[in-house]
Structure formats: structure tokens, C-alpha cells
Image (tube, rainbow, N blue to C red; front, side):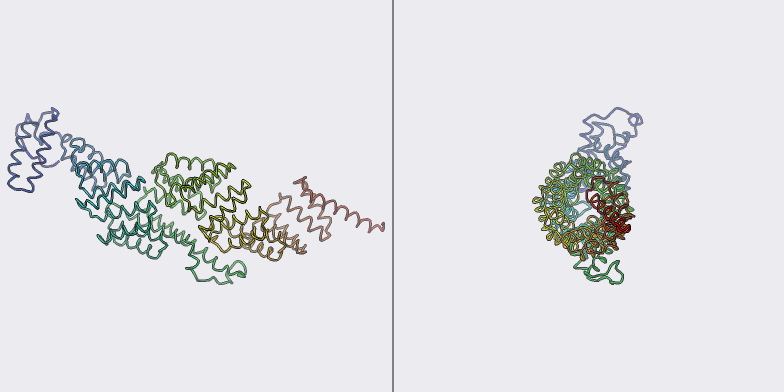
Length: 631
């Protein structure tokens, strides 16, 4: 309890339990004002002390005589002490008592705001900071903290205005500096996708305090968005070395480091910057097309994903209640194909903040990859309708795009298209949304429109293997096989090494099928074999190999390829038919008849199998007649 200003030796006064009247509060306010001024003027102190004694005697009980429940100084001091000790729940209770007793004290509201900010109760913290500013409009530090809460709430424009007001006033900074305002302004500009301006803001913060770790961590992220990856990683490392975090946490630097590593892995210029070529002898196939570098790139991307995952793990070791770290860890796991773990991370994030929009959208994305489309749709709808407006760099367009994916998985193509169109209206440069639009239009049979959407995606991301792959599929549907082959080859020159779909083997399988239809059997065979080298359990790859061999007249090899495919999928009627046709070409009629009969048993409507079976039966009859010597 704070030292009393006045002590009355009368025991019966000490024991009073009469609640102080409103006049007491007014007297206490005047007393506090007099003593505050008296601190600066020694003569006034003596007079002020006497006046305070007179006021407390006339209008209420002495401070020492009060129960601590009615002592503002006690609760204000306890609030500050518990805040410094990071005992936030208890600190909040003490702060509430303080502002309840004396609602006009700006510092009590300030401390209450800091407690609520530490508890991630951003809306309530914002209200407390605004109460502070009502009492002290020139409190620049609090205006800057208000800006930070507005950033956390996704109110970007208001945040920028608030930070700039704090800097323009340049009033009271307390134990802080204008660096915090410049930092929060930078964070708001990032949220507004004004990356170069955000970098300028972080640099201003560092001019004021070169050791200010939050600004260095923010600079790390902005540099990564400008593809300055080496400088970005250096800034994150410097932030951790300086270890001057103010109200932030070192987890911020580890999170931004993870973001930088992911951005580096997915950088379209990674191939140009990574010039060491693989040893052709270590490749799983002959390096006839200069694909050795792609193999190394795939390995490098895997390394970067692992480094990013480690960065997020470090962030969570420091701050296990950081929902951003959890959801972004989940994103990395998804990129690595570890979707079940990814979903678990998203659920952890939502356990900490159940309406965290970005985590809900990421959960929707993960559920789409797992094929749980109904649940995915529910998560996306919740992100859009109930979310807290905190998004990643794609903004709400990400949720609308993933919602479109969920509809596609449910065969509700028109609704999916409407959702993806909404994503594009929010962010016209969103290549992923244009890609999904092309798929939905293709599924709807609107091939010319689908082709135009692939063109938009390619214009935005020329290295996107998925964009070229989708264009190839559209062109095949339009019967433009030569152009489709070109598109698939472009896909092989693209960024398939990032993982996800399409895989390299899928591109090669489709290219081999197109080349077969174009009559380019040798190259078609080569592509099928490259696909098998990458995935030797691909039924389509074995089937395409068999088709190209058959058309080249290499029936024995074709028969062997069909048998490999059937070992993987013995229920495919077309494979049994292909095997029977190859066996018929080899005049192995007995086995051909058995294979073709198996094909018809699986699919009685397979006319080509019936035609070939009839021909085999006829050939068997002719052989029997020839053996018997009858014409």
C-alpha cells in the first residue's frame, strides 16, 4: 500500500466503514492535482500538503483510514507492479479497480491498455488507450499504441492516421520513443500492401533507435516482399542479436524469418539465382533435357521449407500462444505435404483465437487438400462471415478463392466460379484465383473462357507450372493438340519443383498422351518413361508407355507394360483390353482371348474389346481349321 498523505491518530475514525461521498472523490482529485504541482515547486508543496489535509478532513476520511478497496493509489501501484511482473490477469483486476475509483487518471487507463494488449484483447485495449487520450490528448506514446491495436484489429487506414497523429503531435513519449510509432505505421502499411512505404517507415524507426528489434524484424519482412532475401534474413538475425524488443517478442523475428524463407523458396527467380547443376549420374533418369537443375531446385526448396518450419518452431518455443505462428507453421506443413499435421496447427491457432480469419481460411485450404470439402466450405464461410478481419498478405481474397475450391470439390461449379470471381474482384492480380477460375470454367465446358483465364494467370506468373498445365488441359479439350504439347513443355520449364499439384510426373504423363495422339510415339514413350522413373506406381504412366509402344509396333514391350499397369490396378477394363490387343498382335490368341474376356467382364459395354475378341475367336478357328487341313 502506498504511504498515506495524512494520518489521524483517532482510532474511531480509522474504523469507519461509511462509503466516501462523491465530495470525497472531488476533494481527492483536487488534492492529487495540488500535490502533483507541488512536486515541481517546493514552496507550493508545503502549502499543498496543508490544503490536502484540510480537504480530506472536511470532505472524507483520511487515506490511511480507508480500506484498501477504496484506495486508488494502492490499486494503481498494484496494477503497474503486476503489469511489470507479467501477471496480466491479476494486473487487469487491479487496473479495473483503479480506473473505477478514479476514471480520470490517464496513466491508469494507459496501464490497463498495456495489460489488455499483452492479453491480446485488442478491442478492449483500444478503448483503454482512447480513454487515456481523452484525458491527455498530447500523449504521443499512447497514440502510437492505439495505432498498434488498430493494426491488430485490421483497421489499417485508421491505424496509419493514428500513428501519424502521434508523430505530428510529438508530445509525451514517456519511457518510449517515436520509434514505436514509426514501427506500428510500418506494420499498418504492410497490412495495406504498401511494402516500399513500410520499409521507409521501419528505416525511420531505426534512425531514432538503431537497436530497435521490432523495426528490424519488420524490415526483414518488407525486404522479403521486395525479393531482397539476403538483406531480409540479415535484418531478422540482427533483430535477434540486438534483443531490444520493448512490448514485442523475439517470436516476431522468428516468424518473419520463416516468412522470408518461404518467400525465397517460392520466388520465381530462384532458378536464375541457383546456378549449380546436378551431376547427371545422380539423376533418376538421363539428363537429356537439362532438367538436372530442377532436381537441385526441388531439393533446395525442401531445405528452405525445413528451415522455415524450424523458425516457426523457435517462435512457438518463445510464445506458444502466438496464433500467427501456429497458422503459418500449418501453412509450411501443408506445402510439405504434411496435411494432417497442418490441420492440427490450424486447430491450435483457432484454439487461441476462435474467429481468427486467417487461420480459418488456412484450415479451409488444408481441408480442401484432404478432400473434406463440406468442412472446408464451413471454415471458409466462417472466416468470411464471422472472422476478425485479420488476414495474410492475400487478404480476404484468399478465403473466397479457397471457398471456390471447396465448391469445385462438391461439384457445385457455378457457385465455385462466383466465389472465385469475388476473390478476383478483391484482388485482380491474384494469380491463384485466375488459375482456379480456369479450372472451374473448364469443368463447366466453357473452354474459350477457361483458356483466357489461364492466359491471365500466366501473365501474372509466367513460371507457374500449374498455369501452363491447366492451359494444356483446356487446349486438349478444344482439340488443339499441338498447342497443348507446347503448354505442357512450358509447364516442365516452370516451378513444379515447389511441390503440390501438378507434379512433374503428372505433367509428363499428360504430355506423353498428347504426343501419342499426335503420332510422335518415340517422344511420347520417352515422356512416359520419365514419368515412371519419378513414380513407378503410376498406372497412367505405364498405360501411356504401353500405348506408345503398341503404336510403334513393339508389341512384346507393350504387353509387358500393360502387365505392369495391371499389377497396380487389376480392375481397369481398358488395361485388360490393351493387353489383349497386344497379345492378339503377337498371335498369342489363348491369352488374348482370356484378357479380352476379362475386360468385357469388367465392362460389358466395351465395344472395342468385343470386336477384338471376335477377331481372336475367328483367328483361333482359322488356326484350328488349318491344323485340321480343312479349307
